[in-house]
Image 1 (tube, one colour):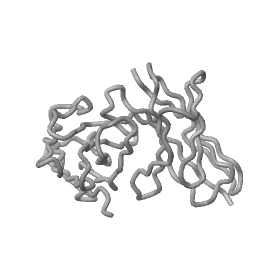
Image 2: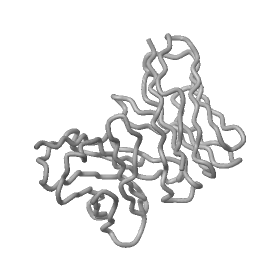
Image 3: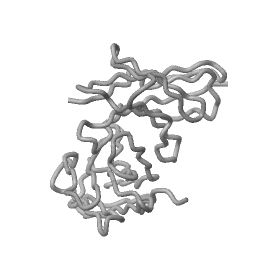
Image 4: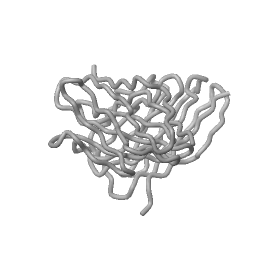
Length: 113
Length: 115
């Protein structure tokens, strides 16, 4: 069965420091992978997606993610975190039927000054 | 332009009552999805509509849950005989169509509290 694992429930990073959020997936074929962000009281917003081609994808707000098939990973990175990046981040894989997103449990990011 | 809208934003109901949650997708989007976000379970897929095709109901947790989509636009999620475990945020999303890698645009959600 398809699944997504986000090993870190909560991460705290200092403002200006780099960030990496981990995501591992279980999927039988070429995965379609997504990262979404949910700020307090806000809906889910797409940061970036991967479905083919270059394994390093760029997204909005200065985020990037790298697809590594050998490690079944799709980790999200940002070189310098801003206080406004504090939010909950979700990794997702599209179901094989293409009718749903299967989400990880999410990682809450706190940014300290 | 307008995004996905959902109503009500909050709903408190007594155990055993029926509730209806509404979703207005982005105009022109043919695919519509319902998800549930709860503390214990994270984000779970409930149901998917695409045009006039039969919906994918594989994520509905019980037969107390149903959804319809009228005229290919507005959707209503109905929960009958609500239970406390139904308390969650119900999210609706829409996409241009169901082609792979299409971005799903999410609404702000309806927070349901069953007392």
